Amino acid sequence: MTTTQAPVRLEVRERARAYAKLAKLSFFDYYLCVLVVLALLPTAAWGRADTWWVLVLFDLGWVGIVAATVSLDDVTGLRDGSDARNYDPAQTLRARDRKPLLDGRLTLRQALRFGWGCAAAGTALWALAIVLAPHRPWWAVVAAGVSVVISVQYSYGLKLSYRGGQEMVIWLSTALCVLIPFALLNGRMTGVAWLECFLFGLWSLMVSVYSNINDVDGDRDAGRRNLATSVSPRVYRGFIAGLSLTETGAIVLALAVGAVPLWFGAFLLPVVCLRARQAYQGLIAGQVLSARKQGVTIHRWGVVLLIVANLLLVHNG
Image (tube, rainbow, N blue to C red):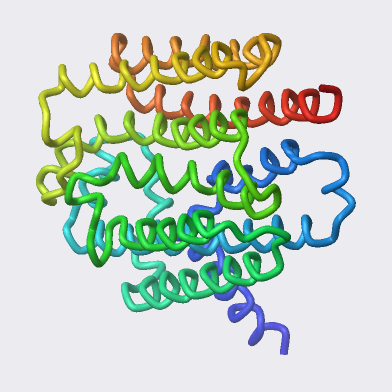
């Protein structure tokens, strides 16, 4: 009896791993948004049940929406051949096992079913979070709808990332994942919340823009029209350098208008220093995949620093 059931259990485990790879669950950075939001809330909100319901439901819904986005992106990447080229072991050190469609662990039909199922589940969870929220400003509800639409249509349907919208979708969708739950729980935005929406979105984008340098040939062959495939390498590197500077500019502006105190800016100084190192690695030394990896590290440490700074700002003034 054991010998007949063991292969079935193994298959189930392997299939589950394949779906986890398809959903890119190892990249948990997006889901840290609720920790940033929680740290921004006043102490009284921590004791309310609806606070925790909104944060949990929103984050689970966000997992579903992101899983739908990356799954459908992999479907398109398989169909147009861009993933086969960008993850060719002979041309890149990027882990090919992140793409379970390439080696047949999952079929296109399974990926499509999984992607649309995740999109439906994520949308339903967000709708429930909105219903249970203590505040429902109309613009936050609209922002949630916009986020769902542009995320799911990133590389499928409208294929926004193939029509010049890649950078905008990445920045906007990840910025909104801070704005939406904060607005649902606080009722209005604050200066520090606007800054952190901008930074959270930018930190995600600063991973992607370096990947695009590595993927430019495969993306161009597949017809993906993003900035990397539309402009010269020199102009694109200038764009990345400009993005890096906007991070510092946003922090300085927030300090100048009094949105955050001076000591808050000191918490973000390590992020600015690491960003300069990333720019050197990717734009001068030409090690774009190393720079991409540094972007992931910067994002994670940035979130830690924001959480600590937020707790000090909100709970100690």
